[in-house]
Image (tube, rainbow, N blue to C red; front, side, top):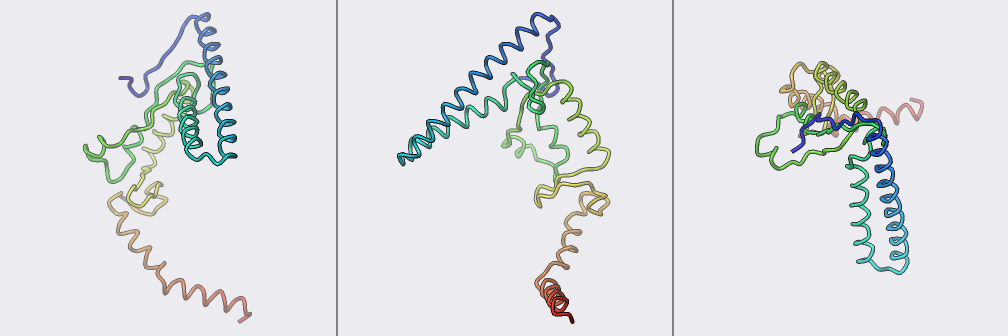
Length: 188
């Protein structure tokens, strides 16, 4: 199994040239196939063939996945010339709160894809900055931010913070705000 950060590097100039041209050839063929499927989908939809459209849509999504997850180009900058580094979004799990249990980790398949070494370095800088800034993804509430920006000192304080915030956004708060705006609109 390939590990996060593993680099696939070619040192020979001739091999890099061959690799780049094969990648371009593969991507061109994939693009042709994708466009052909889209055209077929338009034809099927014009004759109200729902099952045919579903099958073609599934093939289009599969072809699109080949574009996204292929080693043939960087997922971020789309370069076909550079070496490739394996990226796994599993590295992001360290910012999830509460942390994933072993059982949850088994049930999640992280996104994995290829980036060039330059984009890998950029993504790793983002990870380092998030660690330094104490960035968290509070998955139960779908909130992603730094502790400082949220206004708490530790991740365990998120629930108390949200309960306190909720006091300001209950029905009475909205009704009072509405009355205030209406009063302003009427010039009073």
